[in-house]
Image (cartoon, rainbow, N blue to C red):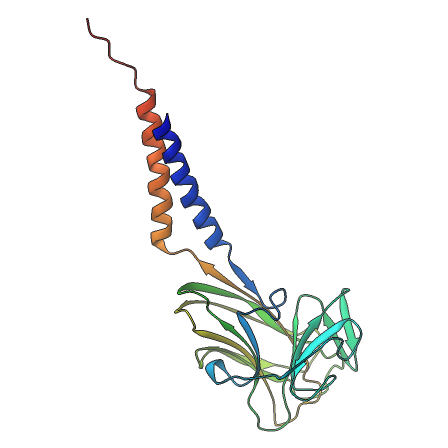
Amino acid sequence: MRHILATVAMATTSLLAVSAHATTTYDVFSGYGSSVFSYGSGVGAGLTPFSGSYNPCFTANFECMTSTGADSVPGVGRVTSGASAAFATVLVPTGLVWMHPDNGATPPVSVVFTAPTSGTYTIKGFFERLDTTAGAGSGVNYNVYDNGVSIASGNLPNTAYGETSAISDRLALAAGDHISFSVSNVGNAYSYDSTGLSAAITAVPEPATWVMMLVGLGGVGAAIRSRRKPAVVTA
C-alpha cells in the first residue's frame, strides 16, 4: 500500500509540473509593468526604455510610459478601469496595450518580452487601429522581431477604427532572448497613429516533461495491477 501511495504521489507531482508549465502564459495587458516586459524605443537588446511612468495619463482611467512627460508621445499605456479610455481622437478598449510611435525617421516604439527560461513559446495576438477618425493619417507599420530579426511585418491602414492584423508564431527561445512587438510611423508622420497590441506568449511543455508524466502514470498502473494479483496459497 505504501508503495502505491508513493507512486501516486510521484505521478501527481509530475502531472502538476506539466500543468504548471503548460499554462504559463504572459499577456501584454495583464502583465503590463511586470519584469518580463519592457517598453521604449528600439528593438530587443537595443531598446531605450521610457524613463517616465504616469497614472493618470491623458485621462483619469489610463496609465502610460513615455520619456517626454505625461500626456505625450511616443509612448505605451493601458486602461486602468472601465471598459475603455477615450482621449483626443483615440478610444482604447481594456485588454489592449496602447502604442504610439514618434515623429520622423525614428526607432519604432516597442513592447519587448524577455524569455525567463529556455524553451518553446507560442505567440498569438493582433495589432489594432485605435484612432476613431477614419481615413486620417497614413496608418502604421508593425513588426514582430525575434532578437532583432523580423519574423512578421505589415501595414495597419487608416481605413477605419478597429482595423486589425493578426500575429501568430512558434519560437524556440533561450533564457534572455527577446521578442519585440513594434510600431513605427508611415512617411515620417505620426498623426492618428494610436495602435493597440494584444499578445499572449505561452510556454510549451518540452517532450521530456511529457515523458516524465507518462512514466509516473505508468508506474501507478503497474502498482495497482500488482496489488490486485491474488495471493498463491500452497499446501
